[in-house]
Image (cartoon, rainbow, N blue to C red; front, side, top):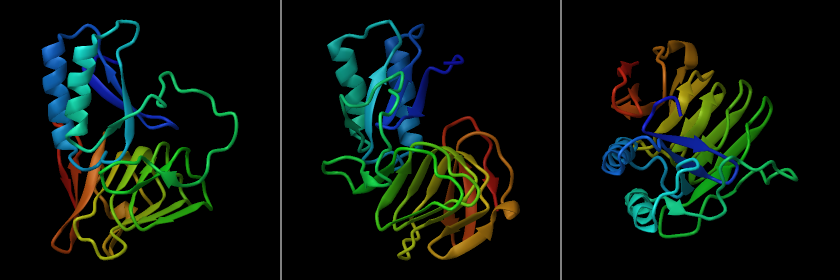
Length: 216
């Protein structure tokens, strides 16, 4: 896990919360709480599991970590596996991310390639990359568990609070609630980032603590 205490990976089934088994449990709990709080709302409705390699965690510890994630709308699921299982057949292009009390979200369980387009009136979670030439339009937030290099538009119904998050944001085109900017006009930045509106400007901020913020 490259020394990171808690990392989040996207799979075809959902999200995997990976824990560093060499760290103390209380430190892991605090770090997970901060990580969830810094990305508040982005993972809402997603299914997840907790994984700590070959080092087992107790039922109580697992429940404590799951409860932290539940506070932010994530839903524990036994259908999420790590390492990821190889698909036996093509997944549907769009399906509900989870059933529950959270806001509806569509889950794309694959990378989107040039010519593919997703349109959803709710939130969209992509467990993969968005290649140049691919398009994602959502009435709510867009979460990409990979590289965003295509065209993305969040808040298509005019929701100015919608946001776009990706492990790396290098889009051809990015828009929120009708406010649009070409990708080459966005400031460059490394690591996971969030795009949101500030007035009529799109700004980029780090998804997790410790990164330098960028502004359009």
